[in-house]
Structure formats: structure tokens, C-alpha cells
Image 1 (tube, helix red, strand yellow):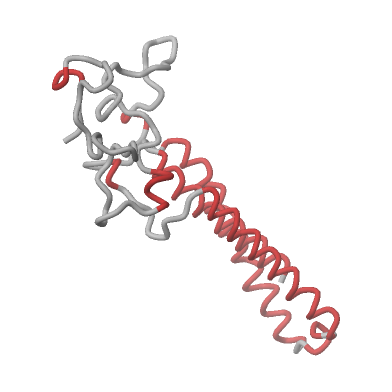
Image 2 (cartoon, rainbow, N blue to C red; image 1 turned 90 degrees about the vertical axis):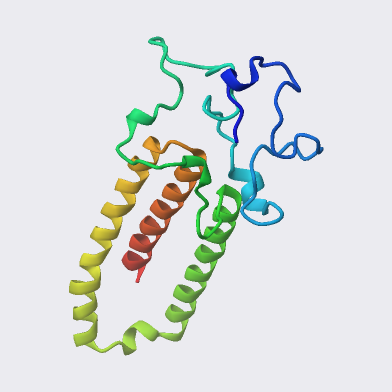
Length: 181
């Protein structure tokens, strides 16, 4: 159970017992498995929350006294925002590494196709179908990508924001790939 100011009574170091508080790992969450994954270590509870471990309330707040994140700012609801784990367990570093590899592969395929003269061998009827049908799809993907990009600003935790933003990136990447195709 997370410590709160009412349950601890003090913000002093050592005043509360947390998961792994007797360890040198400084982890304030219960991992999904027996040990925390690298993804969990990098994303879970990196965002302060007065309802969990920020017992002195928000360190930084707006002029009107509102904290940095307010649950009422989003229509999305959750019984426990901090229990969320992205199914792909992707965070910034792994996302950028994967996207870089994808970009390299796409460029390689395009260059090899051009060198071999592959576009000249395409059936003209098939090219027309791709232009009209697949070309329309890129607009939907772009719209979803930009919508998700905006939506991530209203996520209540960093884990939610990471997952939403990486999904936005996937959509924008697919729209770009369709355009290149």
C-alpha cells in the first residue's frame, strides 16, 4: 500500500516503508514479475504523485495551487493509473533505437528496389489501385497519429504518456511509409 501523508505523518527520510525500502535499488513499486524489468525500472513511478509517495504534496504547482497532474484534466479513468504497463514495454530509448533500425531498413529496401528497376515492373493497374486505396489510408493513419500525440498530454502518468506517444509515432511512421511506398 502506498504511503500517504496521513499514514506516515512525516516527509522525513525513513519515515515510511516502501517496496524495497531496505534495498539499495531505490524502487518504490511492486514489479509485475518476481524482478522488475528494465522497462519497469525506467518508467514506473518516475512521475511523482501525492497519492502515492509524494507525501508533502506537489513540489511544483500552478499559480492557482493545482498540482502538476490533476485527474480531473482527463476523461480517461482508471482504478489505478500506476498499475499500467505498456504491452510492448517500450520506452524512449528502446523506441528510438527501434525506429532508427526501421528507418535504415526502409531506406535500404527503397534503394535496392530502385537499383534493380523494380518500379518499372509494377503492373500499371496495380499501381493505380495502390494510389487510390493505400494512398487514402495514409491520411487516416496521420490523423490517428496526430490525435494520439495530442492525447498523451492528458495522461495521468508517465507510463500512459509513453505508451500513447509511442503509438502516435507508429501511426505517423506508417503514414510516412505509405507515402514513400
